[in-house]
Length: 265
Figure 1 (cartoon, rainbow, N blue to C red):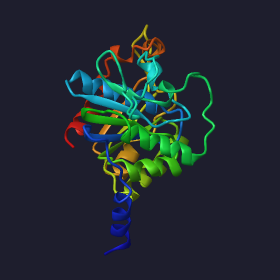
Figure 2 (figure 1 turned 90 degrees about the vertical axis):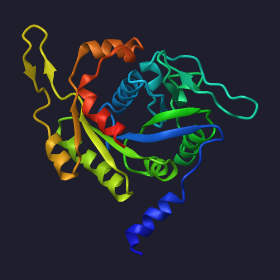
Figure 3 (figure 1 turned 60 degrees about the vertical axis):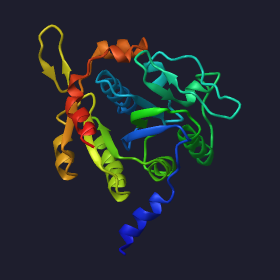
Figure 4 (figure 1 turned 30 degrees about the vertical axis):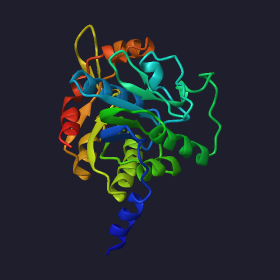
């Protein structure tokens, strides 16, 4: 057996199980090597678009130190556990089930100053101790980077596919390639890539401006053999709706190709 094959088997041995009575069809990790590119936005939009198509969807907010998923959906009430320690996820207005550290902390602005061992244990509990019921898709909003916490997620959860998120800057593209290489090394299927903040369309003229330059989306897509891609615009209306907790009111037709790739898994 090759060293590479042995590594994949070893990774699989770390996987943890859902609690009895829960089931998840496909688990999709949304990742990037760098923060601030819009992973949480894309995770939320993918979940919303899948929900609109009639699927039962959940979001596991694995970005423990920068959790923004609940605010996007307008969720404020905290998750509670029953006497057996089983947590019920909060639900968005369209029924998306969501678990996030910001649905547990009493002070939403309190910093999470925890060692990685504590963070990884919390994330495992988000998988094993939550009543996820029957989901068609689980979106995992990954923390940035390629170190301990993303490694634990790849090892512990049955990730069926990865969506990479980037922006047009060359520096971001380089760091995103690190995360894609990590996914490949761990035997994960790269389903699609999204270039966020790709362009801006002037409201008065309809002219498209590439504020951050041309970007390297197609280059990275071809290099890693990724079939599905999407380019998301800079849109003040999107920002306004997210600030109001109304992300489900956004129509993200730009993600159609990515959604089809997820459905084909």
